[in-house]
Image (cartoon, rainbow, N blue to C red; front, side, top):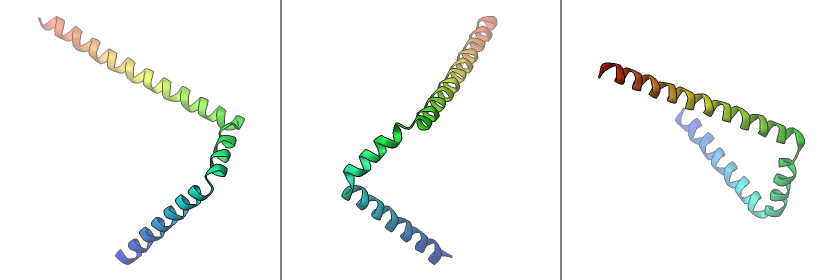
Amino acid sequence: MDDEKSDVDLKLAKRRQAVHRWKENNREYYLEQKRRLAHRPEYLKHRREMYKAKRASNEKSEDCAFNTLKDFLVVEKQTT
């Protein structure tokens, strides 16, 4: 079992090294490809949706934190 795991780890490490070498050797092509793909309309739409979802999630957590603080202050005020 450990031999299988170490073989898999070794293969993954070699794969990462190969990808890293390819990126270094083809840097200009790689960057151009990233720029081109990042400007696709469907990708931009997805990014906007993810941004909106993240903002909505953050607003909910801020509201929750504010309500918790407000509840704490109300309880604190009632006990004094």
